[in-house]
View 1: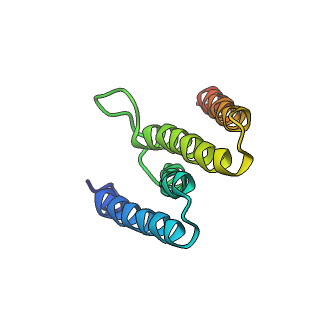
View 2 (view 1 turned 90 degrees about the horizontal axis):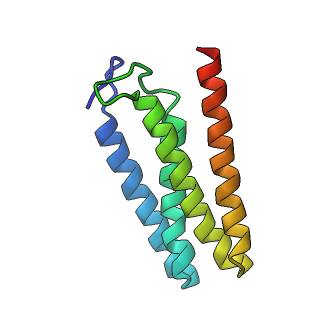
View 3 (view 1 turned 90 degrees about the vertical axis):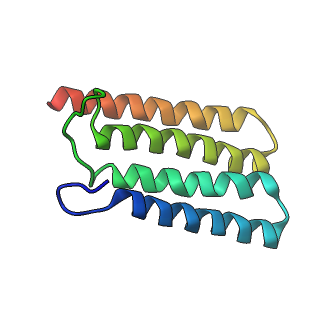
Length: 119
């Protein structure tokens, strides 16, 4: 799907997914840790989605949200999940990943509220 600037988001997203999976496999090869090897690609893909939200269309479509709003939400969720997996491996405690995920959700809610307030 191309946007008004000619960007093909499907091709770009596919390339980012392949790069993220390669990073996860390389990480697993060198460390042997499988939890962060799964979390790291999720984290990378989430960061891509979050950053690409600023370049995507803000116009609402027939589903009720804009491309940028959907990418922003999906990016936050992916960063929360991927980051929680990586944090869990190195903190060895479930409380830290839960607090991290909750903090990101609160940041998303605040950002969304500020964005709606400015419109």
